[in-house]
Length: 67
Image (cartoon, rainbow, N blue to C red; front, side, top):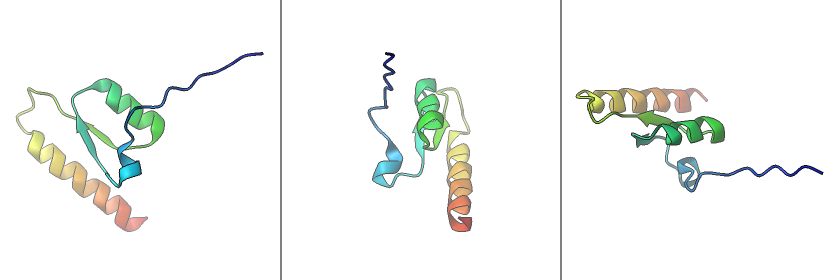
């Protein structure tokens, strides 16, 4: 008999009505892919992070409007 343990992330933003999680941790992005929530990775060296956040929010809004 084989047991498989699946470790779920501590937080799943989509369960709380949050459409976009912004983080600098790659493991959060990987959790987003695995568990189906949107994550935008931002680097502390990214001087245009604000534009990236706005563009990603617009992209997600458009997808939600179409779906």
